Amino acid sequence: MQHADLFVIGAGSGGLAAAKRTASYGASVIIAEKDRVGGTCVIRGCVPKKMMVNAATFSDALADAAGYGFDVMNNGFNFSGFVQRRNAEVDRLNTLHISLLEKAGVRLVTGHAELVDAHTVRVGQNMYTANKILIATGGHPTKPDVPGTELGITSDELWSIDTLPARMAVVGAGYIGVEFAGIFAALGSKVDLIYRHDLPLRDFDREVAGQLVTEMAARGVTCHASQSPASLVRTNGGILLTLTNGMEIEADTVVFATGRAPNTANIGLNKVGIKTHPNGTIIVNDRLETNVPDIFAVGDMANAANLTPVAIRDGRIFADTHFGNKPRIPTYDTIATAIFSTPPIGTVGMSEEQARHAYHDDVQIYKARFRPMVHTFTGREEKVFMKLITRKSTQKVLGMHMIGRDAAEIIQGFALAVTHGMTKVQLDAALAIHPTSAEEFVTMA
Image (cartoon, rainbow, N blue to C red):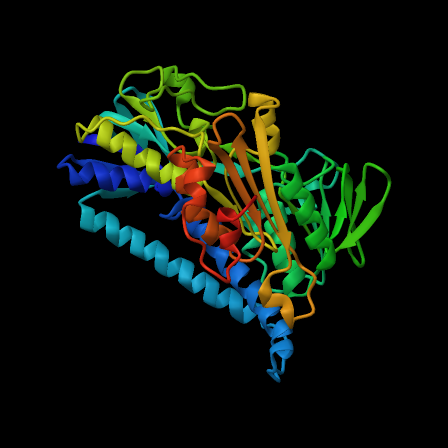
């Protein structure tokens, strides 16, 4: 039986970050992974998705070039060729992460890991003991329980298609749903987006979400609000998706983006008595400890924000706190994030709805909506929308939101204002860079 200071279950973003940081403090570390090293983000999430976003962006650039005087011949998009290059890059990153573990001195074992007790893990036929165990198994996409649900795919299976669907129906309009709707519409698919609420992106600022609906419609995405799937049936022409209002949509591919669930099944949680939330995620305290001493959890299955940077940060905080004698407590109230929709969204801090719920009338909103200079010659009517939310009595910046080109890049810098509690006066003291879209955030009146 082999022993380590730390045994990590799951070699995704959080597990990798924790393992390497812990090893840097001189501790012995073993990490187990039953699939491919890199986890959801690298293998079937944000990294390959961003490659597809980039491909969709080139589609826009080719269409807009004529307005700037370029005579560009567009001979179409070689989807299968792109898929081969995308998959090759994912393979390279998978290999890279394995080599980085080796370089850090972390031992990788392959197979399904299951807790035996608070200090023992079984992987296949082998047993391992550790002073501490970290669970970082991530999550997986789910499907709705409707007749014919097996005819649809999730974001995991989407990476297996090598032919561009002529018609795609996307069910669900969280960030995954709106991203894939925009990507495939830009690449040439006819896209229907179905969601059960009046707007997509339920937990985001409603005004920003409304702007996204307008922009998606202008790009050919047909939105079906306040609807859910009722059934799927295979037909000679593809898949017939019937909605709860009786509407029928014919599609070649139906993608379910209806949520994710934690990978906490069959890993021995009940055996060792680890407590979970009703949604299956593991309950942890502010030191990332479970109720069982010496067992910890980070990432999607620890009920944190389901974002790669959060998992990475929490993995490092775990290592710093429990192996580096540098205790830190993770916070989740000012997380900057981006949605790579078409156009993209960047956001940090409170939405208007959250701010008014917390501070009622003590809220002041600043807005800017304009056609960006890049579209002067393209003929597009696409608008940039920016929103700054402050507490009226103190002028403290509570939230910043943007939809439009480069929103993700722009919001990353401005996230400092929210994270460090800056006021609008301090924000306005920054000299604007002109002409840019970003300057609107420091010139709003």
